[in-house]
Amino acid sequence: MREGDTLKVTRLDRLSRSVLLLVTLGAELRERGIGLHVIEQGIATSTMEGRAMFGNAVRARRAPA
Image 1: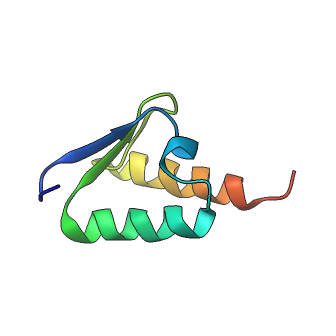
Image 2 (image 1 turned 180 degrees about the vertical axis):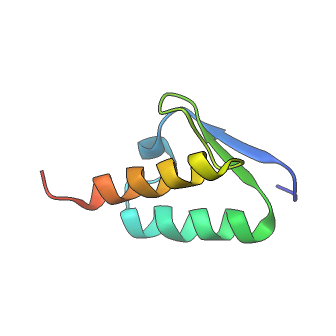
């Protein structure tokens, strides 16, 4: 993928089952200028709100049930 592209996935769990990998992948995509769009959760990291939602979703996956 190149700068300006957007990676689209249906749900975060389709991207990774590991919270650490999600955090790492999110940071790498951001550094490379690649957006992330999580369709079912309505997360698009191209906006400030979307980046906050991504962070909240990752934190929610980390929290014990």
